[in-house]
Length: 169
Image 1 (cartoon, rainbow, N blue to C red):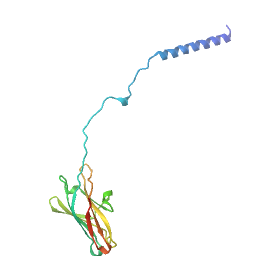
Image 2 (cartoon, helix red, strand yellow):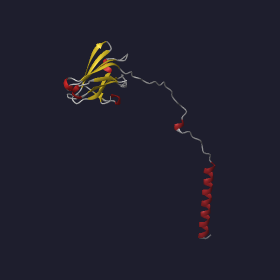
Image 3 (tube, rainbow, N blue to C red):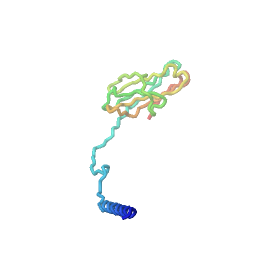
Image 4 (tube, helix red, strand yellow):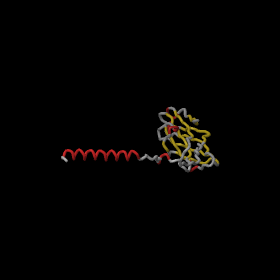
């Protein structure tokens, strides 16, 4: 046998073995699998929402001070049932509805059980040229969720004249 014939026979034999191997692999059926993300187990639980009630402003008053040098806004208000004074948070700024900053310029006194009076103090000279400010009080639940703020807007005209206050809806 010549070398050329031997190589041809070897190549043919190799091709036949490869063909048989491919046929053997193709003949094995593919098994179905179930992906982990299609697991049929599920869980249920009750779902509820927490609505924190807002305090209620009953009235407000703006006092510009002499010539508007020391303006204050006083609000009379009540806490919602089930909440105590430590849960109140005080805010002030141009528009309380857009979540003004927490303020420390206030003092609260108890008028009667559950009824309070809070005086918000403006910066010195802030009423001299006139302007307006909003103040608000919101309630914080133990879960740290808060109510919408109850708010009032006080206004002063030039030199502390024409002071007004409006409880916002």
